[in-house]
Amino acid sequence: MILDPDTSAKITRYRPRQAPAAWADVAPLVRSVVTAVASAVPYDVERLLHITASLALWAEGSGLARDPDTWLRNEVIDAYVLSRAADLEPTSVQTYRTWLLRIRNALAWSQRGEATPARLHGVANPYSPYGDGELAGLRQWAVHLKGQQRSDALALIALGAGCGLQPKEVAASRGCHLRRRRTDEPLLHTGVTREVPLAVRAGWEEVLEELARSAGGGYLFRPRRTAAYSKNLIGSWSLQHRPPGGLPQVSVGRLRATWIVQLMTTRLGHDVIAKAAGLGSSASLARYEHHVPPLDETTAARLLRGATQ
Image 1: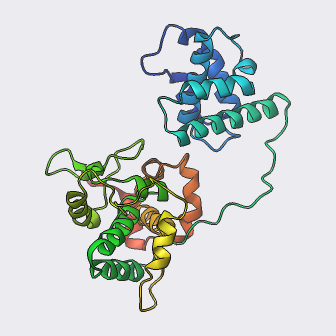
Image 2 (image 1 turned 30 degrees about the horizontal axis):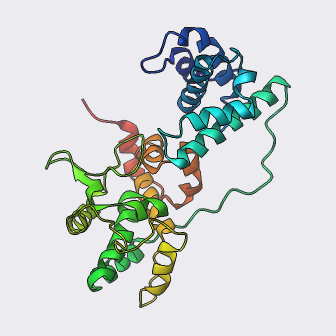
Image 3 (image 1 turned 45 degrees about the vertical axis):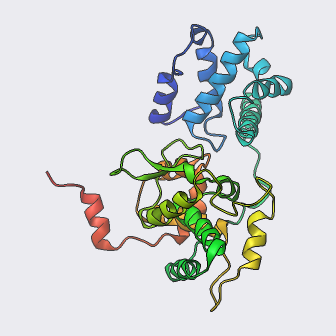
């Protein structure tokens, strides 16, 4: 398999943090597996190296044969992810299993000299972002609600448009999750797992700090609920609280899409955006690209020129 020089260099240089002595024994096999599958699976090479190395070291420590075919058997994958269950969120356990199964399948196709099977289903249709006027209208509507309705509406909108959270993450968010390391630093959401610090968008910091002070250690959204999460927790609220005047319904999916598109519009690196969004790969952002307005000629020229000395 011929890879680009950058990918090849990452594979060659990779070494786990605090690598045990066994790493020297399994490293060549890990690198060969990742080299074989890197172009056949939709994951960053760093993720492939991390998950394959973790599995290999676990298998070595468990006394299994030093062989990728053994590591990637169904029962071995299941035993490995179960061994990580105490350290990972339930969704992360499933994600690890999915990654390893994709690696196993891609490796089998590579060894047989076959191309990766074609996708026979369409790409999921992403939510459309709100327009600037729609988002401003929803915020104004929420501000003028009373009591708990106001807090719930602002929490939904701010956590979606200000942090890009998914529904379960919105539901799990508590006031104590929002904090600043120092008073002059960004407001961070610390209640979700991301590869980069999840900084709140500047325009939503004041709203979320107000809500966090009121909520304390309680939930920001529907704090008096008895269940941590249910499938209709957010959807039922949105159905019962419809904005007037032709404004669209509040949708966490559309708020998250708005957050993603706004970040893409700033030309922030897609890898950083994907990590902040909790996506497996920056390739997932391609579905939002048509919502990003093109650069005008002046801005394009300035960015291409770069900073002057």
